[in-house]
Image (cartoon, rainbow, N blue to C red):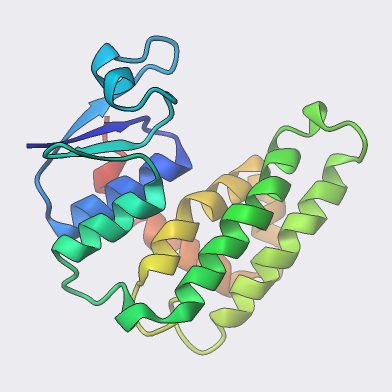
Length: 194
């Protein structure tokens, strides 16, 4: 049996759970208390961060690797797009740059060098890029969800939820619709159930 150690609100864990659910891979999900991590999880992954997948003895400790593993088992709607390089580029921009701006915006009190609005504006540049990608379609790279959409979704959601009123007034109406479609989808609501 496959076991995923997860934390419901962690964006990395969210994207791993979505890929596993989509692929239909049977998995036992263990919700981890970050204050009392299970000994079984720490035994296979001493770094102690989620998500961690124990895939029948193979330990996978990074969300993107878990997603790719799940899609290698089953990818019925071609989320991998035949290895399209743009997927990796978008995910890298999200994970390496946008995530930094998101953290500073969300936890601005920890980064007093700049006002929160500066961090928000830096992150909004990425939101603008995503909105432009949605100019002629409902998803980032093609006419259906792909790995990039799912990998970025939890982080865009987190950024939007820091100040929902501000996000609702942005000119990124295509991105707002993209986010709302996912938030209402069976895939997302299914992985967020307690």
